[in-house]
Image (cartoon, rainbow over all chains, first blue to last red):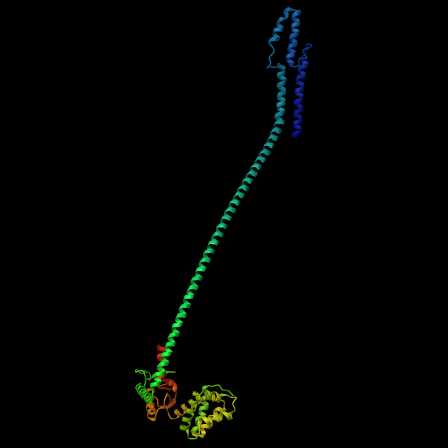
Length: 258
Length: 179
C-alpha cells in the first residue's frame, strides 16, 4: 500500500514536471541563432532572450523605428520572476505534488522515519541496556574481585591468628608440662625425703624400742615381774565397775573392747 | 570332711566335750588340761601344722597327742583330744576348747578370764586377780593363766570381748608408736 502510494505520487510528479515545460515550449518557440547553441553555458531563457535580441537587432537594422522593442527586451529579463503561466502551472504542479506528497509520501516517509526512529531508539535502548548490563557485570566482577580480596585477606588473617594461637598453645602447653614435671619432680623429691625421714625415724624408733626391750628384759627379774603383776591386780581392782580406766604409772593396764 | 570353723560347729563340739567331761564328773580337771593343750597348740606352729595335716595318719597324730599330754593326763582328756583330731577339727582345737571352757564356767555361773603373763601367777595372785577382774567387769570371773613370754612383763587379761592390757609389751608398743 505504501509502495503503491509512493509509485503513484512519483508518477504524478513526473507527469506534472514533464508536461509543464512541454506546454510552455509548445506555446512559444523561438529559433535560436546558429552558433549560439554551441554555447552550452547559457540558460534556455537567456538563449530565448538572446534570440529575441538578435531578431530585434536585425529588425532594427531593417527598420530603425522599431527600436522600442529592443529596449523592452533589455528591460524584461528577470532572473528571479518566471513567466506568469509558468508560475501558474508551476504552482498547480507544486500543489498537486505537494498534495500527493502530503497525502502519500509524507505519511510513508513519516512512518518510515518513525520506524527508523523507533528502531534507532530501540537499538539505542538495547545498547544502553547492554551498556548498563556490562556496567552491572563490571560492577559485579569488581565486587567479586573485592570480595575475593577481602576473603583472601580474611583467610590470611585467620591463618595468622590460628598460627599465633597454636604457637601460644604450644608455648603454654610446654610451660605447663615443664611446670608439672618440675612440680612432680619436687613432689617426688619431697616424698622421697619424707619417706627417708620416716624410715629413718622408724629405724631409730625400732632401735630405741629394741634397746628398751633388752634393757627391760634384762632388768625384769622375778621380783620385778611379781611386782608388776601385783601392781596390775591393784589397778584392775581399782577400776571399779567401769573397766575403762587406764594405768597412770607406766606399768598399769589399759582396757579395751575387741 | 569339712574343716570350716563356724561358731555353731564349735559350740556343738564344745557341748559334746562338756557333756562327756561332766558325765565322768571330771569337768574341772578336763577343763584345765584341755585349756593347756589349746594354748600349747596355739603357741607351737609345728604342732599345729602336724595335727592339722590330713595326710598324716590318725595314729601318728594320736601318738603326738600322747607325747603332748604326758602321763599325767586323764584318759578322758586324751580321748577327747583324739576325737577332735580324728574328726579333722584339729585346726579348730583352740576355739572348741575355749567354747568348752566358757560352757563349763557358765555352768558354774562364772565367766572365763584368760590371763597372759610372762611368768606364772601363784594361787594368791590368781585369786586376787579373779576378784579384781570380777569387780572390774561386774561378773564372777574364773582366771585361766597362759604363760606367754611375748608379754615381756605384766599381765594381759581378756574377759569376753573386754581386754585389760597391763603388759610391758603394750607399753613398748606405745613407746614405738610415740616415737
